Length: 327
Image (cartoon, rainbow, N blue to C red; front, side, top):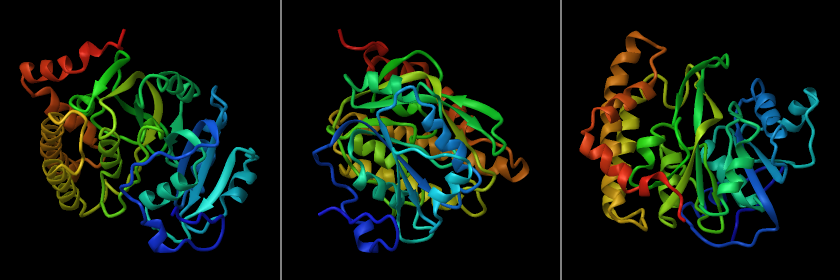
């Protein structure tokens, strides 16, 4: 039974944690995209994020705005003149339950066949949904390059730029080496939930669950998403390095145990290799950020990937069918 979704009041904690790893087929009311937006202390940023949804060229969407801080975001958006019948206001019933819990509340209430996630301080390019939905006719996961911004919304760097291409679980993370919350995916193929027990990497855990149901994804090589790097966040704050390392080791253990039953079993070794590189990058980044608070993890993981042998990098490209769609 699905959790009861409330627009006000409480959500029982046991319900919020229910069906975390379920992958099932469900009935959908409409063709379109359900956009899930968790919101925690987002009063200063949420208007820009919601505006980026309202500016989408593709208009068959609903926005599930899930408050995790008892804030009435309908009132917050109203102050900026932002109202739309497609916005649905939900709540976790708690404060600081975490993005995973809030996203699961949104997923349980979603009515459309496709899903995208958008943090309450991030932005979508106006063409993102339009281009993603076009590829979802053939592929059940669509990713895109993204632009990394600082908290003043000034560009820092990009990730994943290049040609549009097919990816598999073997090489996906070597292209999208940072950030997994930019996906748009088909719930008719896979409909998992986020794991709130993880300290970090919830998005990667979710991605690996999706790859348990499909062999290929499609990557849009232009920056269609803007990700805001806050000065202090879950993964960039004091005392987090050890917890991040433990979480990544846990994902590696899960991969070895068959927790993620990939349609391509050999993909497990490639993802584990990426996580090993990520741990090395995490160590180097942890040292760098002590003297340079503006250091970016993305620079260090990219350096680790580039240090891999040419044969290995060629191998992960070859398994992607040369990056070309099927005939």
